[in-house]
Image 1 (cartoon, helix red, strand yellow):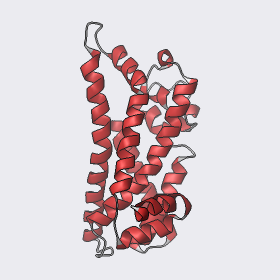
Image 2 (spheres, one colour):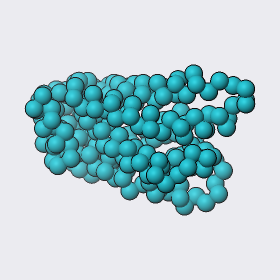
Image 3 (spheres, helix red, strand yellow):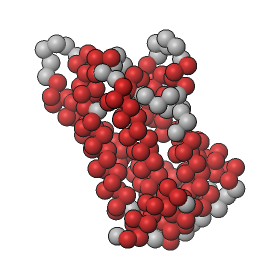
Length: 214
């Protein structure tokens, strides 16, 4: 357990050390537990906003309760399923292009679990801003729940909801996630930082496109 806590510390202080450790011993139990618990807490905290959006989009005589519960469960399951799918895709990509055959699914999965904690921290910060500075009644669309300043703030009265959600993901804190992912790729694939950064941005863009479409 002590090593797992150390890994969390290294994620913030020295990510390169973390991924070197995960490369030799892919521990992910504690990180997974924290990811699940914080995700559940975020779903609970933002439930009134989710419910408000659902009510606005359905007939007045519809039952909201079962739907909002389903949405919250789907959000939690989606977080984990995405990590599993992305780990499998990256493992397959690594095998096809013969990138460090010593790196297996378990190594990539453990790394993505830890990297996802960065995304959860960003979501936690966004949710705190949402709860403090927005009233539930002010939320007209999903993009209105994005509180961290991003490109969506420059979109003006853009009516395309999916595009506004996509632009909302492009913000200053996204750089933190990209930097951590770049370091992970550099350690595991043994490539230059410039190449690692390119692939990190590509993976990040792929993730937010999928998130936006869903």
